[in-house]
Length: 59
Image (cartoon, rainbow, N blue to C red; front, side, top):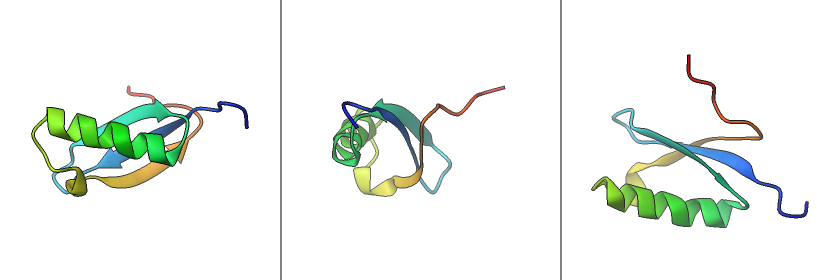
């Protein structure tokens, strides 16, 4: 699994979602923390909802 990136999706109880690419769950947790801080929400508010190979397609 040499540098295989996956898409990690997180959601808070209010329906705010974030999805991004990371090489590991550990890296995804660090990115989640930074993004949550950037929007002024605690990182604990976001739960992991999915890990997939391709991003969710918006219609």
